Image (cartoon, rainbow, N blue to C red; front, side, top):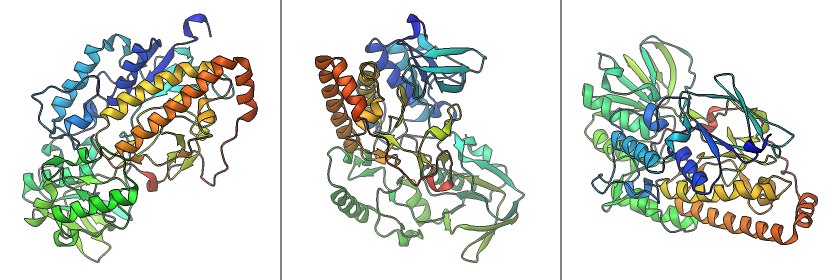
Length: 459
């Protein structure tokens, strides 16, 4: 690597998370190139959500700390408003000049065993560039997960990511939405409004949360860290006061503790269920032409099936066997650092229970520090910080919890940096001797299963 690339970083993706990180790198004086596979800013907000989408988290919890949303925006901005905001952010911080649009990254490989010497990036143009490091912000709402069932359906089928407006449902009115997440709920309500009714098939019970509780956006209840048992008890009480028992809506009781899987934030679905506009169905047993049979022995005829069944986490430009996979998610230190590798950062692979604005802003500033600090150590920062912070695969967490862990990681990093500067090469040698390998795991590397799919959840 020549002098011009010894500090330059590669940022993959120009979406909500990627642009927040680009801002932090620019302000920290870290040179970088940013690649976007499409011709637009915004990632999933530009090409992955339907026209009628609104935020499920409030503007207060979704906006970047350093650039608040316009005062005239409503509590839950629309897709168009979110896109305008993301573009304004890019222009305000003059990030657009660093973005190479319509340029896909096709391969990322380390220049040595663990990336300490840098990474080689191959572009869709065939060009190869060497970088000090790579930040992967390619999003996790693009690899569609469509479950397989016995038989064949002969009607129209589409994934929720391919839905933009009601015309995509076809001209006939019998629609089955498969899934119970945020997109499934929105599309079931929208299909019912379009055709008068719609069915919604769920494999198991979900936790449904209203968008506001006592007039306060649900995303803003997650401000102060509390032990998980206390959080669950408090939220279950609020839900009982808001919705009562799910069974009165015809919904199955959740088969998992609250907050162990992604929750569904929706206020319109319960209204549609009580008015008979949306009819809950059990899991699909088999398909037969235009007839769908369910596991409870019932069946229905449909013209269209919408698979609102989430996504799989993928990094197709990386050798995915480099990760340790658990429930189809990679083990990462603080949702970002890859164990055993230096100068490689996964950014944005987290599903907070509230808006991600403060997490992106605070985390980006921390990551900009980590990028510079890595040059002081001969071992990956993931292994250095991994002595204190356990690698995890779950992408679910509370906003207050994540922010607290970012603060702890930042303090730990600064402590290591101070010692490194005081002791020079002595500390580096000590760290190299003390480095511990990642604990053994029974997880299968490089494989994916539907058990770890991500439910679609617009901010």
